Length: 142
Image (cartoon, rainbow, N blue to C red; front, side, top):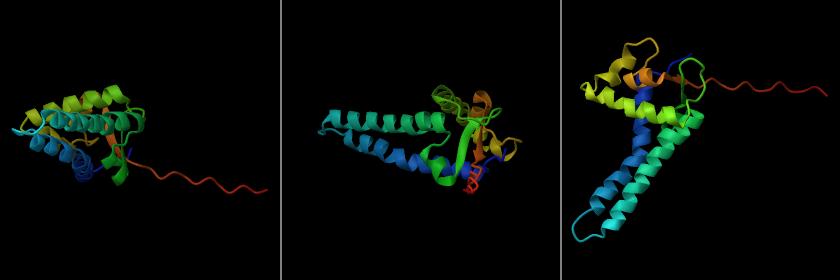
């Protein structure tokens, strides 16, 4: 497998964050005295739904969040090379808490591990790989 570089992984997560973070920020600014609290709650729930759709549903079903799609990489099972499903995508993100809990050193593991995996990847048995070009079918001779 052709594993994605650490910098590519950082860039994909940055792109995913750029999509979702504005909603989280808006929810915080809307949650001020005098503002209708329900608006902040709706925006907050929308941001969580957007995050779940991108990071868990899309990544689990296709291997690609929006950031991964832009940069041409996929999140796949480290043995089969196939998408991991929604449940394992959730498990992976929860396991990323361990990456952060260890002074964020877990996020640096892809720099030194053979499969370029974080702790979250090792727990969920996943890797991030570069997309292989799809072969064009040969023209038929009629």
